[in-house]
Length: 144
Image (cartoon, rainbow, N blue to C red; front, side):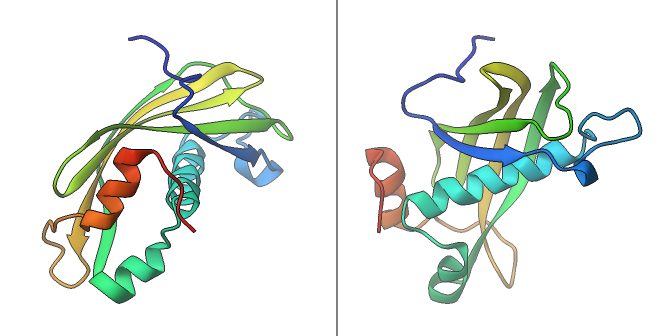
């Protein structure tokens, strides 16, 4: 697999490692990387001008993770400032696939492939991603 971490079309979000993020060995507890990835995807969407609370209120839609694959490459430690990158790999009618990395000073710590599905907030059945959101994603533009 080739590295995509420095793709100019990717979005990056900084995450500081706090003591509470670490395990007894002093490194980031493996499950906490999922939180970092989630925060970056949320901030990526916010950077597009889209709030998930608005998707829920206006369209009755939420995004849920349906698949995730992680490769743990290097440990991250307390107080390090990480960069969590988000790159849209593909856009479907009701799903988005992301490639994400978590880096420490340009060195990949984690590489992830994440699929999220847009679902109706009541039935939890897959629903079309709103056209205006797909346009924002595919254009690479930022909202506001």
